[in-house]
Picture (spheres, rainbow, N blue to C red):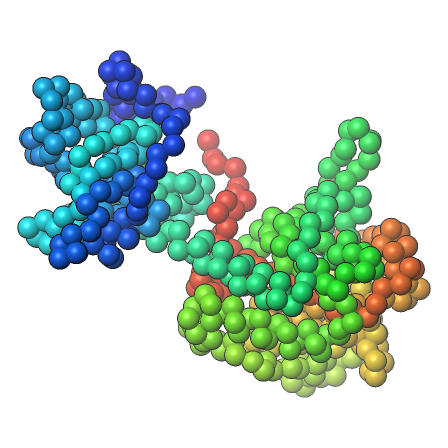
Length: 503
């Protein structure tokens, strides 16, 4: 334990004195509230004479002690409100301990209290609660940072350091008004999408996080070991193969908001732990999926932002459909003037080198295509755009295109230069799927540590027959970034992964 500061020592002494007075500073009993600070501010009026018997609870954020009367500010989950405390009102009998000692001497900014009283308006027009009873609900033994403003209007001791906010999210949420807003919007996004999927008749399910095979995506997994079974296990990189096994089982559609894990780099759009929405619908194809996603996103943005147009990174982005559709190789040709679709691996290597695109020896034809697209096209896709018809080499779980040789029925949705969603007409031919897995294994032998492993249980399920199916994965963290106007994924996660603190 680190050495206590002077303030922490003083607060622990106040805690001891409160306990000596026979007051439990951490009571277990339920504290019933009748209203919130925001409701009082919105609804109270002197004319109506309402809110004359209220109970609210929250954290003390400021105090002004003036002898027999004092003011304090309380903060609950909805906002802040002024309290007026009068000694003789709180302590109508001879014993004035609750005011003179407990409130004035032993309570601090940060303590959580419950108050009973009546609402009124001060002489300066501020809605307040005239406190008749005070209850200590939790004593804070660590001081909050108190923001001070100097004569020049500059603030000091505010809690704005980005790294500290991520490491101490609880404190961030306490002291920074508006810190909760992004996370409340995140919940609205999830709820809106969940409503759309429920209305479509899909079933929300749960699939394993610990998996014997890290399948369903091209990514490097986290590896662990199960002692009892004495087998290696992987934190899931995707839940795709499990969800499709449920489609084999006979459900029309299934979805899961899944925590996925990828043992890869960290930057402003990547966290090793992230949230994906995946859903699969039987008897549908990728064309249906494009139409459904347009409608779902349009409604979600309207639910969360009040309109279908948002501004992000200086770009005005319109979510109202229909979205632009552009074939993968057409997008590359549009930006480079080159048709690379027929190039073999050696030709692609030479092409990438001629364009100064960073590549390595483990990259097969699919990853080379992807590197070219990433270099020339991705960042240019600002408005919602479906990039469709990817080459087979990039899409091992996808049906071959019904009319275009060498391509698949796959699309990715790009918004503001980033991939937001990835969708297929799912491969349901078990023989073709096995061949695709075997191709992936050859890439693994070549050194590609993101190549997919063969999932025999999934293949067995496919052999029983899976109906024509369309599925999609949507990056919920990136979508939240867009709709909350945040530039880093860490801003939309309560507890992002951080480097160890320097000692």
